[in-house]
Length: 156
Image (cartoon, rainbow, N blue to C red; front, top):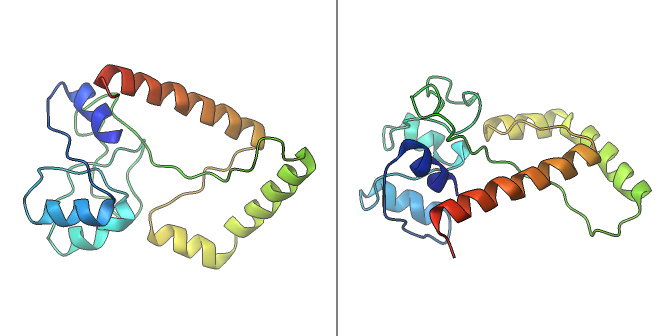
């Protein structure tokens, strides 16, 4: 999805090569059998530092903490191409609200512990702290954004 948004924003055409996961895609990229790949920064930072991969840009709104020298796509001249990676905590739809609130409160506590903060930082992941209601709205917006990308790319 990230690549499709980039291709549309940059106005270029490329052949999609599907992979089962990042390790396979990264291996193929390092072997020169694919030309580019959008990867979570934490998975490729060591390869970049070792000179095995060249980071052209990150597709987040701001530069990655662990690779501050790498520009964003917008800084590199490709507007409207950002597709930030995010993770969320989901529960069944009928989960009682007090349980959701308790999970939210305890998750916030966990995110502030030094071990969790350190681990997230090494992966270049920054918590996007939201209330449950704001997270619901975020998910709805992401569904609309992804549907537009899928339609524009003709993905079936």
